[in-house]
Image (cartoon, rainbow, N blue to C red; front, side):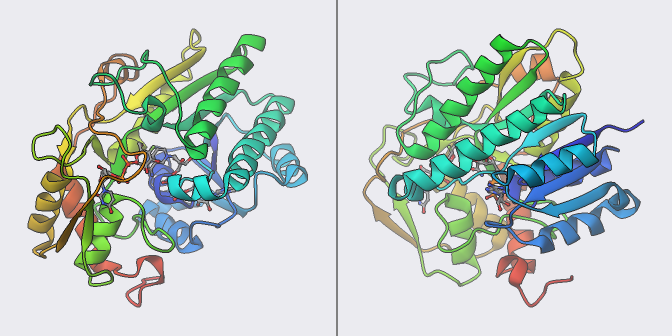
Length: 348
Ligand code: NAD
Ligand code: UFG
C-alpha cells in the first residue's frame, strides 16, 4: 500500500516540486497551505503534471496555527510521515517583523508537532537551511560544523532543529530528518511550476529572472570585494528537482529502524559566484542582465557550499544537474510565466 504523506507548505516553491516528485513516485499526498506566499494555481499545475497520479493529491487551505483544524485533519486521515515546509522565509523581513516570524514558524511548528504526537505520527522531514552555518570558518560545510543564527529567520531554523533533537531525546519513537538546503534555484523542466515570489525578490535568481523578462531594470550585485574567484559571493546552487528528490530519499531513510534525529545537507558540493551565475543565466536566456555593482548586503557571507558526502552515503542521493540546466529551466519557467502564476499565459 502506498504511503500517505502530509506536506505543509506544499503550494510553495520547494513544496510544489516535492509534491510532484512524491506523486510521480507513487505516494499519496495531502497538502496543507494557507496560501500566504503561494497560489493554488501551483497545485492545479502539479495535478496536470502528475497525470493519472493526480488523484493521489488533495489540498486543504489552512494555517498550521489553527490547532482545531489540524486536529480534525489528523483525525480524518492517517499519515505515515510529514514533510514540513510551511513557514516564512525572508531574512530581511524577519529583522523588521521578528514576532511574525516567531509566531508563524515556531508556534505553527510546535502545534504541528503536538498534533502529530497526539495522533502517533512521529516521522518527520523538516526544511532547515544552510543559514545555520552562518559565515563558516571553512568550506565545504559538514553537518557537524557549529551552528548559529544572525537573524530571526535563521533563529527559527536553529530553534526548530533543537526542538527536534529534544523531542527525539524525550521519545525515541520519533524519526526525524533535518535537511539543510543550500540555494535552491531553477524550475521543473516543463516550465509549468517554478518560483513565484510576492513583491520584489530577495534572492539572486528570482531577481535576475525578473530583469530578464523586463519587470526590473537591473540586478544589483551585493559586494564585489569578497576574497573569491571574481570578488562576488559564492554559493551552492541546487536544482529544485534535485532538491525535491532529496526529500524522497529522506522519506526512504525514515523507514530505517535505526534512524533517530539526523541532519543532512542538500547541495551539490560546488561553489558558484554571482558573476558566474549571471553569465550562465545570460547564456540560457539569451538576455543581457544589466548589473549595478554595489556594497555588501548586511548579513551576507563570502563563500558557502556543502559537503554532500553524508547525504550521498546515507541517503543514497546526489544532485544530478549543473548550473547550465538550472538556468535553462529557470528561463523556461520565466519565459512561459513572466508574471508567475498570474501570467496571461496561465494554462489553468
Ligand atoms: P515558499 O514561501 O514558497 O513556501 C512556503 C509555503 O508555506 C507557502 O506556500 C506559504 O503559503 C506556506 N505557509 C507559510 N506559513 C504557513 C502556515 N502558518 N500555515 C500553512 N502554510 C503556511 O518557500 P520555499 O522556498 O518553498 O521554502 C520552503 C521551506 O524551505 C521554508 O521553511 C523555508 O524556510 C525553507 N528553506 C527555503 C530556502 C530557499 O532558498 N527557498 C532555503 C533554505 C530553507
Ligand atoms: N545577491 C546579489 N543580488 C541580489 C540578490 C543576491 O548580488 O539581488 C547575491 C548575494 O549577495 C549572495 C548571492 O547572490 O552572494 C546569493 O544570494 P541569495 O539571496 O540568493 O541567497 P543567500 O545565500 O543569501 O540566502 C538564501 C536564502 C536563505 C537561506 C540561504 C541558504 O535567502 O534563507 O539561501 O539556504 F538560508
